[in-house]
Image 1 (cartoon, rainbow, N blue to C red):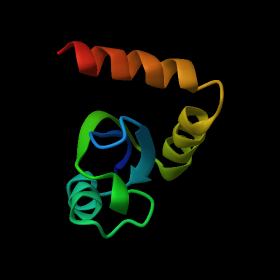
Image 2: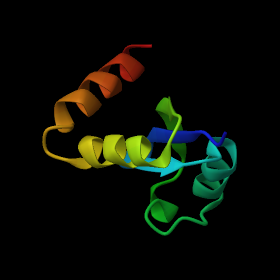
Image 3: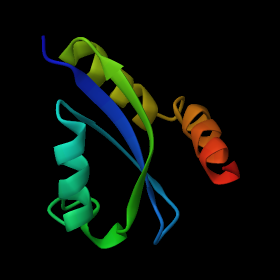
Length: 86
């Protein structure tokens, strides 16, 4: 069974977050950091600060949509705060 991941990247350049979804997290992170993703190309270097695994695409995309929403902002702030405290 294919797994899906929702992930949050932190841009060390502009200190902002990027939320995405993929079925191959290692390959996707490599594409982000090599500049192949238009949305993050000019925001490198990027650090993976959070990921969640899902058994199906629908649940993963619903979680991604939530994290990109205004309501998900609080959750992203908590994740970022934990990352920066490390």
